[in-house]
Image (cartoon, rainbow, N blue to C red; front, side, top):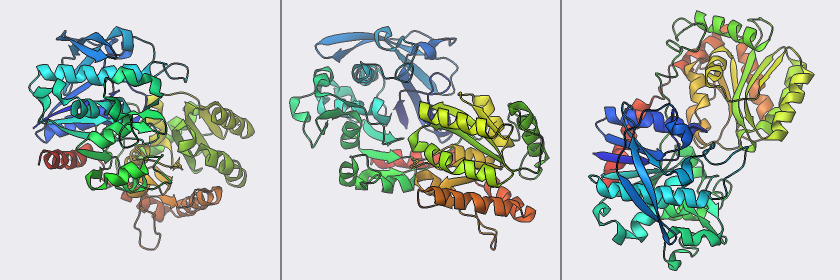
Length: 478
């Protein structure tokens, strides 16, 4: 079985978030299940920096009334076959989607071109069995393949799967950009690509793909409701028979406390003495008092409304004032949240460590050194950090939504079952209640040992998940 994945990022070549991690880990896992996978992303400046590439064919893709050129570059030595669509007009820039927190004005054109160019390249290849698209940046390829099928006769038998990693990001653009797409005007209607007067790239993918997936079973159900559907719940209900939820996995070679090169010490579920050393090293690195008995709360997050930072800023001052805890925060994002966290750190000197940055190595050390991981997301399609936390023996406190609800089970001190602590109502009181339950269990060493062991025993590896995707591809082919 041959599968080609189109995506806007893949680690280590281009990364802004979890999508890049998925594109780094899922394809090799699929290869171990006998799937021949090729990954195709734009040839950003960052993707080509320090990477040896082999030149490939040149193709031209239609954009409005023009034929824009590009070169297909191959990256030798990649874990799976990986190609870059190099078109310097669109991708030779400092950013991926924009710079200094903004969006490039021509993103509609850039990613329409990427989809067309990828299809032109595929015409020269042995056709894949499945074209797997990820998020809005690749979703238009489904519409192009079906609505302009006469341009791609070689790809007529290809099946299309679309994965929605976060429905909040849809690729919505003004109707003045319609000419870029070279689609019939009849496609710009509410039943197809039109969305409240705008063009919606993700909607195009949802409607034209053979199967649609998202990154947890709970989120697949949630996005069919007005509360979580971001305006597309009706479209998703229309396609509910073709909609699947497959929980994201983690790269358990990269995220393994027994082998993690970023840590001061290694450990596993049977011998966690190394975790004690990791906590002490993290406290020293962040300027916190080296007190092993004090609960160390951890946050590694994009600082955005989705991630529940407002709840943290409501609750944490009272928690810090009323209890003897420490807090380590790593992340960057909206200015209001950065300012709020600065004020929190200023208000509790020596007890709150704040790093406003993206630092992959420090993220590993925080996961290993923390006692409790706070992840109160307003919504969370799949989530990865709660999975890293379970693997590293750092007990998650999460909002019961999306993938968080699917992957974290409330700990019951009586039965000894469960892996963390959850709250259902998205309120400060709900979060505070879950924190209080976590602190109460931590005060009982035997119960705390049990919840840590339960979490570390969970298997969220891509090995398991890859089997589900292979079965999905087989379903699409049927």
